[in-house]
Amino acid sequence: MKANDIAALMVTELNKANAKFPQFNSRHEGYAVIKEEVDELWDEIKKKHPDKQRMLEEAVQIGAMAMKFVQLFEGAEEDLSEIEAKCGVCRYTAMTNEEIRDYGGDPCETCRELSNWKAKEEVRC
Image 1 (tube, rainbow, N blue to C red):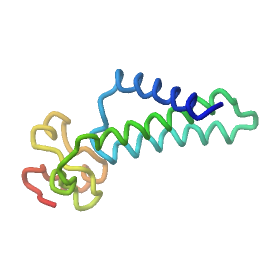
Image 2: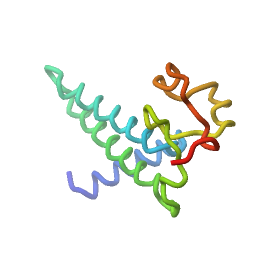
Image 3: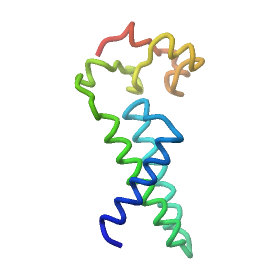
């Protein structure tokens, strides 16, 4: 398969994903989604009789999610360190008080257990 054909598959997959799901909320979420896709490919690779088509699909999804990750920075003119605050324990990207309220609490297990989450209005990098 030629590189242009592979890229076309990835762009098609990216367009489907973008129509179905919004952009990643953070670099951390993007990483987690890409890792999940890599893990799915690895699960298929480890099988006694891996399915070639399934491996192709997973590899294309990895590429598409990597493209989506790159799109996260498109048009981002501000320095990320100036627009994001982080949890001091897990380094999760901070949310506003309203976002925390809408989410229903701390956005990650580490913070939920330690109750140390602060809204980004209250925390500076």
